[in-house]
Length: 131
Image 1 (cartoon, rainbow, N blue to C red):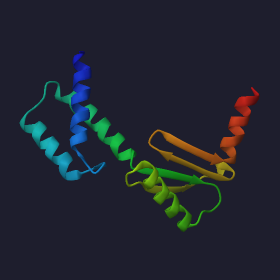
Image 2 (image 1 turned 60 degrees about the vertical axis):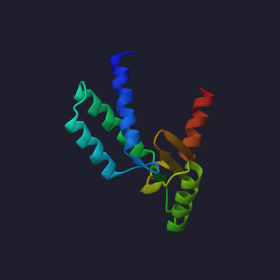
Image 3 (image 1 turned 120 degrees about the vertical axis):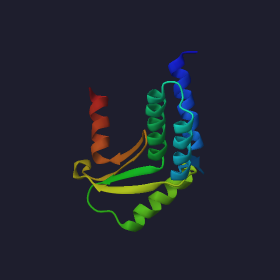
């Protein structure tokens, strides 16, 4: 096995140890970092870089960005947040952003997942299918 792959897998396991019910726990991250200080791994810079990457991914899995054109009621945002938490089986927090470029509708981004129900998104899909 490639040594760098082994270091990435080690960092991933450390990131998994940093989770509490699917969410990154400050206390667990501190415990992992303290253990790494006491028992420095081979190539610590690579391990820490990969650990940071995995932690950022874990944090982003719990965040959703809701973009909308016009205005959206807070109750609708709360309902979307609740539905996303149920669909993903973990707590999802949302951030709302007005984006007039969408023309109308919503775009929701969670990590690498993008749900686009906007007029701009549909027009872009139509343009791709025509060319």
